[in-house]
Structure formats: C-alpha cells, structure tokens
Length: 254
Ligand SMILES: NC(=O)c1ccc[n+]([C@@H]2O[C@H](COP(=O)([O-])OP(=O)(O)OC[C@H]3O[C@@H](n4cnc5c(N)ncnc54)[C@H](O)[C@@H]3O)[C@@H](O)[C@H]2O)c1
Image 1: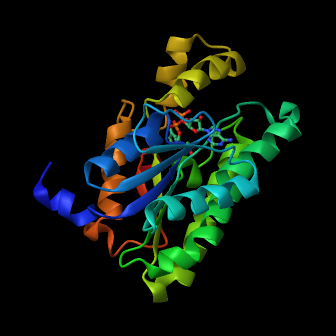
Image 2: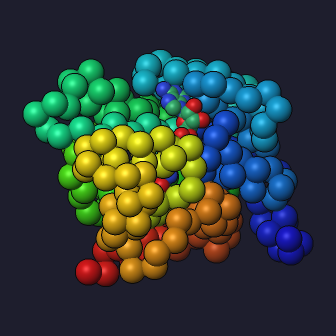
C-alpha cells in the first residue's frame, strides 16, 4: 500500500452495508486499511469482521435511518456511504414470487434511497463526500429469470444519476460500480439455482451461463471491486459522478 493511498482517505468515516460478506467485506477491509473508520452494517453482522459491526435488516427503511445515525454518532462525521447489501432471486417471470420481488426492490433500490436521504445533510458537510452504490453489469444489461434484480439495478443507476445532479453543488460525488460476476457467496448460491432453471449441471452453469456474456472468462475477485471503490472514494474519484463505473470484463461491449 502506498502512503498516498493512506493519506488520501485517512481520518474519513464510512458506512458500508452488507459488510459481513463478499464485496462489502472486501470494501470495508480496504477502506479500514486506508485509515477510514467504518460502520459495517449487515443482517448478520460479524463482530470479528472489518469495521464496527452493526446489525440491521435494510429491507426495513427505518433500519437504514438507524445505520446512518449510528455511523454519525460513532464517528462524529460521515464522508463515504457504500450501498452494497444485496440478494438475488432466480425464477421465470410467471413463477417469480411477489414477496421476493418486494424484498429485492426494498434492499437494492429503497435502501440506497433511504441511505442517501438520511446521509445527505452530513455528506454536505464532508470535504470530499462520496455516495457509492455497488450496482452490477445488470444495471446496464438484462439476463433472463432475474426480473427483480435487473429492474432494481437499472433503477438504482437512475437514483445515482439523480443524486449526482442534486449533490454537485455540495461536492457530493455519486457513482454506481457495475461489476460482472464476482466470486462471492451470492454467486456460489446462484449456481445451484441457475442449474435448476436452465436444466444444466453446476459446472456447465459457470461456463455456459454465468461467464457466457463476458469476453474475459473469469470471475472478478472481491478485492478488485474494493480497489475501485477505494479509488472512487479517494481524490482520484473527484471527477466521477452520475455514472456507472463498469468493470464487466467485456460483457456490455457486445
Ligand atoms: N457477486 C457478484 O457477482 C456481483 C456482481 C455484481 C454486483 N453484485 C452486487 O454486490 C453486492 C454484494 O453482493 P455479494 O456478491 O458480495 O453478496 P454476499 O451474499 O456475499 O454478501 C451480501 C451481504 O449482504 C447482507 N444482506 C443480505 N440481506 C440483507 C438485509 N436485508 N439487510 C442487511 N444486509 C443484508 C448479507 O448478510 C451479506 O453479508 C450486491 O448488491 C450484489 O447485487 C454482486
């Protein structure tokens, strides 16, 4: 780690959601290494994980309010919000349960909205505020059997664009990181579901379904996403706002 990375972010405070696993955990670790104080909010908080563990079911709008309030109370400031918590549900449209649609919209779209709404006054006070959503390549392109996920991710990109316009005058920079498939428990769980829906073996799913749309045939590592978030959170990210920051291994180049 260069001293520049540390100095850039040292002393700032962040709220990372879904921070107990996968991408969120890697982001919380990376920011903490750079000297950021991190509130690590999660449905299943890990007291041994990075940051200060905070339990919250973020499908409940008020839990998002509580998470922002806890970060400000704990650190006395809030400079960076990383809206990352997410789940997936894979089903054909006619079998897609309404309850799962509502859960995904609540977590992937309403949670970032509530986090922004609540964090905004404090972000305005930050010398370098960042609101970063971990969206997805599915914010830019669809896949079958993922009606709720694709809809919510496209929606959250709209939110990011809107917040960028609203935050510009106050220096709040808002971006949507859009990765292709990342090696996390979310993807590992999905392989079994995809195998069932597509009638394939799990090995075939990875090669023929997951990696099929990508030009580069490998999973992204969580640490690679965390590196992009750290860049966007630091001074290098100062000119990025209202945009998807796409790391899709050639998916949307088609
Ligand atoms: N893994 C991928 O391939 C991939 C690709 C693009 C985007 N993403 C996005 O990245 C984000 C993180 O995904 P991941 O792959 O690291 O998943 P993950 O399953 O490894 O981690 C998700 C975390 O969110 C938490 N969470 C789930 N429901 C919650 C709730 N109701 N309230 C609070 N926390 C809750 C889980 O406990 C878990 O710790 C998601 O928004 C996902 O859509 C993932």
